[in-house]
Length: 396
Image (cartoon, rainbow, N blue to C red):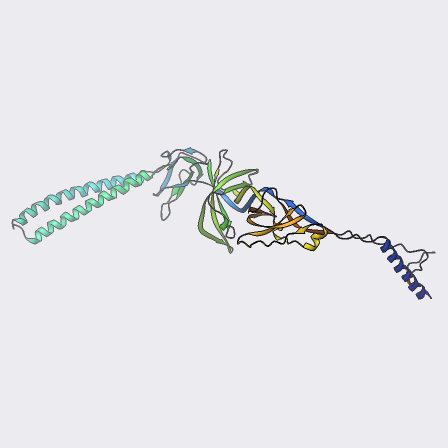
């Protein structure tokens, strides 16, 4: 009997739901045509990279002779002029070498002058056949030997004098000392490599950023493009620059290929310091006041039946498919008509229209459908409907 009552109650419930659905019918799907007017926007495409701030001109000053640093006349951050004395090395040994070379030169000169006179006499006698061939050859040999020794001594003294001049170290350019690698009394050895004593930057108001650009983006970068970058030292400041050079040499690190891009940066306030890490944005495309439409408008294909329900007609004129153009639909009062347009740069959800549209055109973007779902029926049971088997029972 309980099973029968439950089946009867279920049937009554279905009838009630049917009656409720008839009283509260679901709303029909509403179809609307999305349109938008053409707009003028600024299109910017960019490439990001990281780099290092460096002086435009940076010279490492060293020495070509070994010895002890006797005096230092400049320190970090000192401003120097070209030709200014910045350091001196101990010259005692070099001065002694010079004096020894001078003495050797004088000796070779005396020997050369003597052998020259002797050779001249022997040659005169030889021409008169008063001396033998061997005596003449001996005089010629001694003359040429003395001449070679004299020339060798002359070359040696030039080298010694030059080394003595190298002991006086001057600045090669106007600039600022950004590094000093030695102390007074320190011994430096000029072997296969010239030891660096100072690093001088030419002008810190003119800096450059050497950025590493990924191989996937380097094709978009070219000289003259505008650049913005920031450094961690001044997070609220944005610095500007220009791409000056795109270097052809690739750098591979951990299977990642990058190319160096040199960016000039004006630094009038001297905020940019050598070695700072720069977060770089290179604007590969910048177009002001570009006519654009939503990109999805280029993919819109009208449905004549659905648009007819909205009171809109679709012109069926077939346009010639010109290479390099796209089809777009224009709304004119109660109709849609196709038009071929030439597209340019895409930026985000917008695409530039180079030709084919005007500022007053309204383009169709797509069809949207909105359907309001009916409210779910109440779950309250009729007090006259029996509970299903195993249902909740009121506590006594």
